Length: 306
Length: 317
Image (cartoon, rainbow over all chains, first blue to last red; front, side):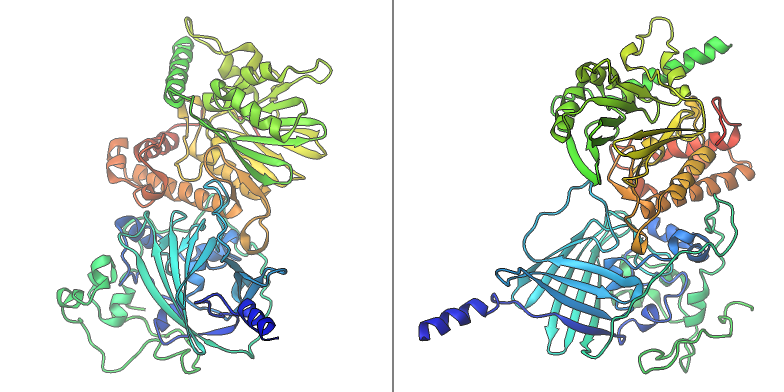
């Protein structure tokens, strides 16, 4: 009997280091709230290690594209951006029906019904000629209590919703760590086309067993008549919105242009003083985090006439 | 004058032959990538070959270079023992038609089930327009089942196969091939993810035709949930794609076209436009050290295309 119990216990115990990430998770927005809830300001590239190509691509982005070009309407976020936590997430374990070993985690995020599988069974990557997808191909390995995930085969997407691009050559690693009912996810994006060094971002989720992951069905509709060869874009040097973020927050315009040096604390010395410091918050102040609605400000930024 | 133009055209064709064919194909391995249903993409050293297999035999879209034909056939025979019934050429460049004759010979077709080689008539015109002293394109590889209409239909292996002429796009003889049942489109070099399109002005290509052809692909393709999958797209070169990938590529061509057109309106010369690098934010994605189409070459083609009327071979769709 003792022998039977010992065998049973050994067989059912998780492999050392495995943590159960399954369950319903809700994102917390104490980090980077303005970027994640109301959305990033146009022209705000601060803290992003962009190269010149990425900067020009973002400058030429016209947000009309996502309504005028029907094919953009139902696009989900890509896997790297979806972990910024813009909707709730359910994580399900996938187990081998015979051995009950954990084969993968499957995630489903409400927005656009994003579904992703993180394979833990050591399967090989698809061919370099295989299709790329929004969620890519992810494999995970255990690093003590941390799950390290590596994702390839991504479609072209964005690093921010203000047109900052991320190419289909990019890959990213994630590190999932569970602290009780909190899940910390660190993403490290490498993109030889648009980044001069890896972009590191972290997000926190909280276990929320009662939440419902509902359907989110999208169909494209051609809402605006347009010529077939029209894709909204700003010609180089003509985007009128690029100074808005500097004007709103009183920042030097050069700082908002981003680049690797704007990632690091030392840049504050080089950046100099904020041009117009405010005595109170005037834009997206704590919205979302405490239940407030994120209304767009009605006034024009200080540097622009309405 | 006409003769001079024809000779110049053939010289350019010869140059592109020399440029396109790698010196040594001995070590090239053919990779077989399943696409969807009974459609496969075969990757070697030339353009991609699309293969449809079924009870009635084999249909190929493009044949890469002649020396690769035995390897291509060996891989096709792993997919189907059936007769090679159709070769469809998407255009006239040697990395897409070079293996026609060799495949025809290896196919040893039954007279009752002859091999037909199909392409738009402009492809046949280009391949038969040899200059004095130039080696003729092998007759066994000529697309003598040419078509001159906006589209041509087949029904093969249980599905409709629709061939669309795309006027003045990559060349003046481009065809898209839609496998309607399998839900796959083979595009030839109209669509080359990871590389700028080769707008072959000398052979009737134009940027407006290129954009129109890309938009036609988007009309034909129906993505599945979350704008991915559904219709799959086999490009002329590069990986298997879908609607969303074509959208990114189309947007790139349109945006670079817009910038070059703006510079032309400002009176800039082609050298000034190239120096301004209007594609510089796309170069890191679309140019590598092995790229056949450099940024300058793409920009120059767009400039020339916008500066002149469409070339010969225009047809209606």
